[in-house]
Length: 238
Image (cartoon, rainbow, N blue to C red; front, side, top):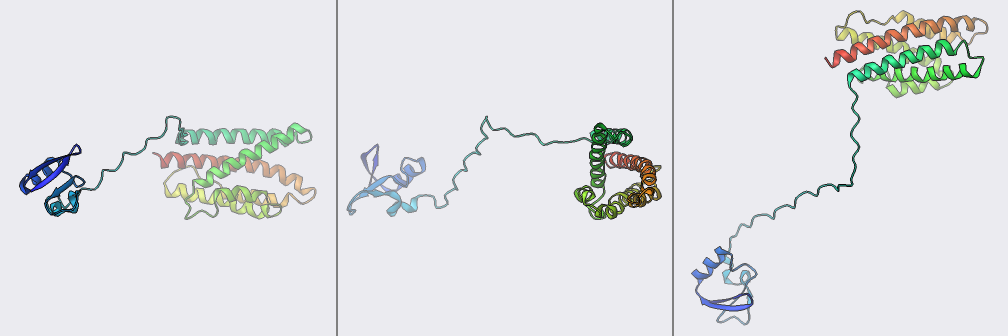
């Protein structure tokens, strides 16, 4: 016969079947102290012969609920730019570029003209970076970052224009052809001519003429590139 402690008070005696019933009801648990004749002292039920009366498969403990972030925690929303925004930005960048260059170069003898040229170059870099980002990585000759960054390496930039500018014209034409986009071809002859004129601009006297002609070709070709890029954005999101 068994005795068990309930509310720190010994209860019993009860036989094994009654113990089993109390275990099922939860009144006797694994840690409940029990005693029977022949035992030296009270012991937890799980450490006695009664352990066979307890379920052998114990379900795993319930995982605590996830801790919700503090109300004071701020998470900035991820910036998402729509295709319409991309198109608008490209148009605005190009408009600002050609105005700055067309006005800044003739006025470069004064400070405001130099500022216009610098602003035009900045927006030109924005355009080139964006257009190269439209070219798939597996076929692109360079990355958007390198396309812009290497332009600022002295002397090396004469070679680099053939990669980042003329190469961009070729890449855009390949993409518009792949996506069956009509009437958006970039004149590769003009892009190549611009790169050659850029190299000739370092020749004394001749450089003045080549710079003027190159500026016109530069703006016209970049406009074609911008239009091809916009067509790709619209096609890829259609």
